[in-house]
Structures are given as C-alpha cells and as structure tokens.
Image 1 (cartoon, rainbow, N blue to C red):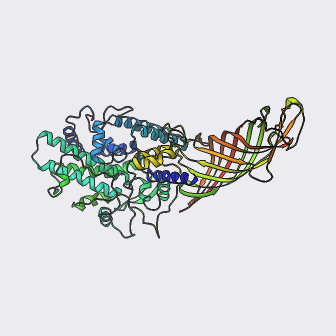
Image 2 (image 1 turned 90 degrees about the vertical axis):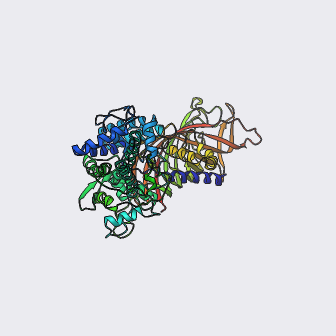
Image 3 (image 1 turned 90 degrees about the horizontal axis):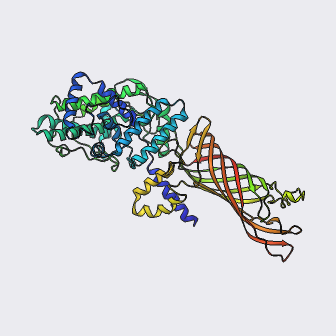
Length: 629
C-alpha cells in the first residue's frame, strides 16, 4: 500500500514540476510596453499604423478598438486594442493563429483583460511586499478560472528566457546565429526572430502583391498578429529574471528568475548601454521605456516593409504564402525553427537588447534556488492539546496534554508553482512522539476524588510512533491519489491542469496562502494528516477507567490518534542555496481511537465500553530541509 502511495505521489510531483510557470512580464506590463512603443512612433509612422489597423479591423469593428491603442482603457473593456495583443501572446495563447482566434472569437479573453486591468491597479496601490504578493495571488486565481490553460501553457520549453551566452567574446550576430540554429532549445530571441520574420514576409507580400480589399485585410491582420506575438518575446528579453535564469535545474531557474525579477540585475546591451532591469510584476517606468524603444524599432521595420521601403524576399518561404497568422506553437514544440532571412535586420534589433549572462562555469551570474525538488529534513515540534475527556464513557472533564515530537521528513518542495502564494509541498514524515500526562483525572472532578499523579490521569504519559503525510488536493482531500493513475493513462493534460491547480489552492482556491506583514497564513484542512500509534512499546500503556461509582478497571490498550491541521501560520522562513528553515504554528483538530484493549484488573472483568477522545491542538514546528541537487 505504501509503495502504491509513493508511486502516485511521485507521478503527481513530476506533473507539477513539468508545469513550473515562469513567464515574464504580467499582462498589464506587456500592454504598457506596447502602448508606450506605439505612442512613441513619429507622426508619420503612427499614421501608417493607423491606416493598416483600419484595414485589419474590417469585419471585426465590434471587437477591435477604433484607434490602434486605447490609453484610457479601464476595467471591463468591451474591445481590445493592438497593445493588448502582445500581452495575450505567449501567456494566453501559444501561436499567433491561436492568439488571433482568442482576440477575435472568445469571450473569456475579455475577462482576462478585465482581470489584468484590476491587477494593474492593485500592483500600483500595493504599499508593501505582502500586498504585492496578494495582488498577484488574487489575479492568478482569477486568471486560472478565466483561462483554463493559463498555468500549463508553454510548459514544455523555456521559450520566454534568453539562452546563456556560450563564451565571453560572443558578439550579437554569433549569439543570434546560435539562438536560431536547428535543434536549439526554444528561446526568447529565437521566438522573436521567427515570428518577426513571419510578420515581415507577410508585410512584403502586402506591399507587392495585387490583392483585393478582403485579401489585403486578412493578410495585414495576419502580419499584425505575427508581429504582436513576436513582440511578446522581445519584451520578455528585458525582464531581469529572464536574462539570468534559463540554465540550471528547475529549482535554480525558478529561484534565479524570482530573485533577479524582484531585486533587479545590472546589464549591458549589445551596443554598450548599461542599465539596471527589474522583472515580472516589478516593472518600473524606466524598464517599460527601455523595452518600448526596441519594440518601436521592430514595429517600424514591419511598417517600412508594408510600404515597400524594406525589400524582403518571400517567394521561397511557404509559411509566408498564406493569409493567416503563423501556426508554430511554442507550447507544443521544444526546438527552434530557422529560415532564410536577412540577419542584418534582426541584428539591428538584437543590439538594443541585454547581453545574457555566461553559461554555468567561471564568470557565471550568481544562481539562486527556489524550494523546488527532492529534500530530506528534520521537524521537531512542541504542541499543547485540549482534550474532551478520556476514553471512558463517563470521563467528560476537559484536560490538557503537552507533547514533544522528533521527526524526519522526505518529500518534494513545490512552493510557488505559479506565484509566491502557492504551496505544492508533498512530504512523508516519521518519528517519535512523547506525551505528558493529561491534566484531567480518571474520575471527573465533580466526584471529588482529589487524585494527583500520572497514573491517575485520564490519559497517563505515553509515547507513540508518529507518521504524517502532506499532499495538495484539487477538490476533495485525496482526489489526486485517485485521479493520478487513471488520468495519466487517459488524459495527461487534464491531470497536469488538476495538479497545478491543486498546488495553488485547488479548484476552489481557499487554500492559497495569504501574505501579511507578520507572516503567511494558510487554510490547510485536508492537505495534511498526522497519525500517532500509541501502545507499541513495552510495557504497554495502561489507563484507569471508572466502571461504576465504586469500581475502577485497569486496562492495557493501544490507540491511534489522527490530527488534521486546519490553519497554518508561517512566521519565519530562511532559504539558502540548498537548505531552508522555518518556524510555523498550526491549529489542528482530531480524535484518538482506543483499540486492542485488555483488562488487567480485576482479572476476568469484561472490557468496558470506550469512546474516542477529541482534541484541539496548537503545534509550534521547526522545519529544516536539505534539498538534493
């Protein structure tokens, strides 16, 4: 049974790790960069963009804004402007073709735009780190409801990241060549180059071919879709965590990504400009302005091509000979595609972007780990419990019991799969528990017996073998254990979505962490269960039970206590490269069931009827984990 449980847990762990979400700028940040880029176009370029936007809107005037951008867009937008397309690309679609379909045909994308607008307000109004974390938490919960693919999209590649620079003397052209080489892992520069060149090829056809109005509208709409999708990855290049975080283990990538996004990273562009960048959900005005300048240049290339000022040979590229957006899916493919294209045009863009750090080795950017991966650790705790009487039917006095635990843990850290409020922690804990004697006596105080010793307590001091299991669930406790082996065979994608949702609060996200200035609170009922096995030692545990007003029975017994944490408060937490420590307080409830009862005295007496003992407990827990690389 334990072996089956471990197998199921392992499958769940692999699924969640495989969907580790590390996108770059959040939706309102992507939109702000594109908005600034279009606003910074010269009057001539802006007029050209407005003209082709009017052509592209034919047939979609109710969904697309009249102006190419809507700087005054507020909550609950009923139309989408072009600036929003780069935000929908990548994070809410996996290809230009899918993005355009979502923009024009789906209703849920308007909900996404509304959620993003609220997130923008919440981030700007956040006064401290806990409010900032909670604003992202609330947004991600709502986005997952609106866009069911949100957490798992683009989970098969590192397309939102920059490839590491192979050596210190690599120049922009050599780096671009390496990013575009066949069988190279998908990356932000490669994705930008592919989709930008797709837009340029379609713009060249638009400029040269004799098309009717309907064909020209479809073609320029497709070109704009390809370019918006490309711009998403061009903008990603300016997120600090994506300059620093592609190489290494999943834990190192996420930890490095999260650290530099928040703390910032000094970079130099390929053309020699030095700057400090921040990252996802921490974008400053200067970050937006820097990225927008390069986005503007990219848009100008497309506009110049559409006007015939840049000549691009499209006749040998079959992908350009259609009037629909590019269909290359960055969520389903892992390797970069390459095509014949004028590298000079791409290098002109790349030279404005940050130079990525060197690959692992001498001179590498300092790396950081997140709490992802296999760990072992220790977890001593101190607890106090209020017990509702004793095991005897007539033992009703409320008492208190103090306990000490010494435990070992093995598990998988899955903190923050989507955001810092997430908790996908999985562990199995085993150890020893020592209880003191209960403060209530074996006879009720109303009887006036006046006993005062450990043996006369309702529950004398005792020891137990202690086990504890923690596992997130999707809708009801334990559902992932049941669903994993079935869905792994019939619908792995569904299982992946369930696993990610479970690790971030569940289908009803009431178990997502809430950050405060004094620590993190989380409702955890159903995620964790502790089981203590009493009476396994020799001599056996003994209790006294009043059989009548004048008769007492001495019993030898075993019992099994179940503990269900309800609320968890994490006050202190520290994490280094491969180990973490934290101090937590849990409020829990549960019950203790007696079994294997034998009468010791009077010999031959029948076993009296016993009952479970309910408890409410407070545990103070120290956790130390060592993560295995």
